[in-house]
Length: 153
Image (tube, rainbow, N blue to C red; front, side, top):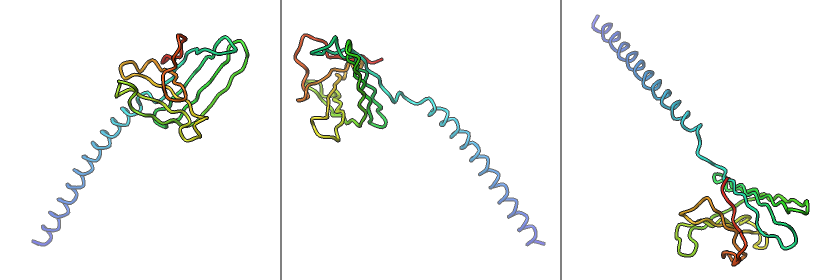
């Protein structure tokens, strides 16, 4: 009889323990669902910059630059105004930290994984990430009175 009571008591403890574990895993699942809901409102992963930069033999070049900051990919669309020429370049980018006196500025190296002649460079200062500056081939600001900036859309 004592062994039967012991078995019943052991089964009760096991069943009660499973019930509690089920409850806590249910609450863990509902917590995970809440976290999943929070993740569906993902942070901005694609930044889009636009502007018209100077062109030597046309009215200007409308540049639309899309940067996917999660995948480190870009799409750069160049529309030569007044010439009906458009080009789209897609590829990978890398970043470097620091520019001039701004240690937290960000330099974007488009096509970083290709030969230097295929690379292009943009930069924004840490205090104004909404303005992207086109850089020359030496990763320097273009010394000109003309506008070589793109604005975040």
